[in-house]
Length: 475
Figure 1 (spheres, rainbow, N blue to C red):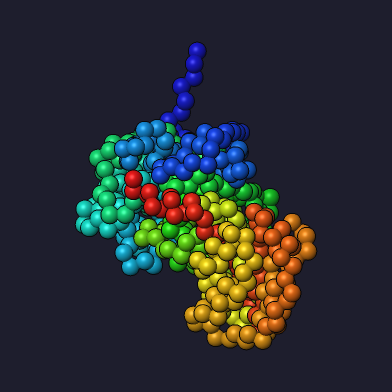
Figure 2: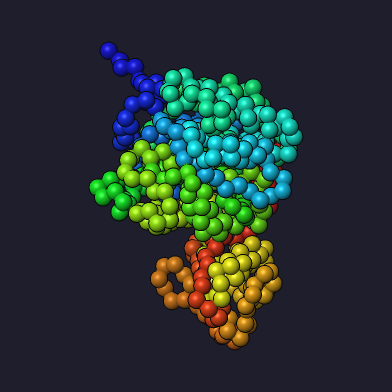
């Protein structure tokens, strides 16, 4: 007799059991789609970045559902739902673009009204950004959250009794700006997203696929970790993100979702997320454009147990902050790995700066310079463009040209190539420069020689394909 699978409601009410599930994706081409990719469209060169298994936080479930938000999308998931069995502490950082999308406005309001407590879910659609859509866009974003709340309330859990603080769901959208959501179509599929919630790796991977737009592969990471505050307890952290273009965040990337079963108080979670974002998602750039929809959110449900981390002096605070920052950095780098039209992954390391702020401003300026990025694509060791970008970086308090050095450092351990030392140009070995620039990974080291601070930025090159992709985005 066939066994009937448990419903999401029963899973959400029972202890979490982690199944061992693997998923393998195949590859056919480098062709980019403008909705979530299926496994068969992931390029062979990107397969190594797609996990085949994972270890996910206790009490969290995910699903990816096909809605067809863009009429051309006839089969791939474009609605993601991530939910917790119990209410979570929550925090988010949002775009600083003045034209903030409706879901940014709505989600900011959810967190403000709830004080970061009692959040249960995150719902995301791709294919339409719901940005610059007026009052109707705000209403549509609110309706998405309310429909998820309604589904979660079916469980009859006392934790979901109306507490007068409004929705328990964070809403995100990504896609074309200026077009209204097909809201009825989305609302009619949210119950399906709810009933297909699952704690399996394949479900989390499906959710990661559902938030993609021009991405060529879903971006998903997970990891176990330990805290000294709870010896013997294994905690978990997972994250998914999306983005390949319009990437120069001033908070996160287009979209990022983090979940953990560690017990973190809502009062300190915003500061921890901001710290991590400043050193991860805020240090990447594909094209220098900051999206209207940028949102990075974290949910912490404490399901793994142990004493709650309530302040900076709590045991385990420093260790969790380090783990969160390192994990966020790894997740953010996947966006650069998938930069639109990119052929190189470039690390810009600015060292011996007078301040972290100076180092980051210079690294950011070099990372978004079109002339630097096109030279990298053309495999041209034009270090003069790097110096030019360093020189016009705004807001830098201390920069001494006579102490500045620039080096190309390959990541394979082979000898580096010095281009400029203490303001004096080196005799560049063009053959060696070509060898380094042939590599997929490259590090550009800028040594300012005026202090002890360092900042790192990750970027990619500009290619002909970038223009093609963005010239065709709405067609």
